Amino acid sequence: MSSIKSTDPRINEIHNWLNKVFGSTQYQLDIASSDASFRRYFRVSYQNETWILMDAPPSHENTCPFIDIGTFLFDNNINVPEIKAKDTNKGFLLLSDFGKQAYLDELNIDTADSLY
Image 1 (tube, rainbow, N blue to C red):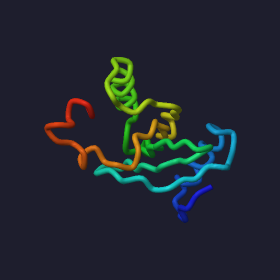
Image 2: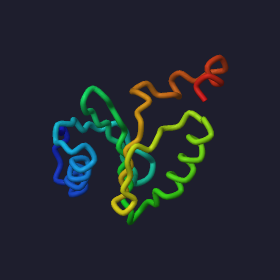
Image 3: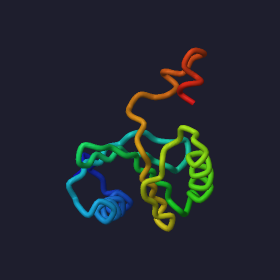
Image 4: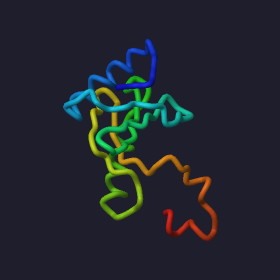
């Protein structure tokens, strides 16, 4: 289920939500990265696929602008994560996963057009 050991109550909320999304507890949850804000990111592995879970506590973050902009960009064929599932009341988004390699590590004058 998770390699994350925490007394953080949001971790329990995340597990409850993922159980509903997947209809299963047979997923793996690992820390993917953190943000300069209150947001956190986790990599979720389930049935040979991975997603990124954004945890944005509603008391500190509003996911609606992210959803609106991300949906607009995705619908206009811009390479952004697809929103697979969301719970704006809890501040959870399940996003397509672009992998573990950071864009910044690969971005240069020769790769910019294809990456963006």
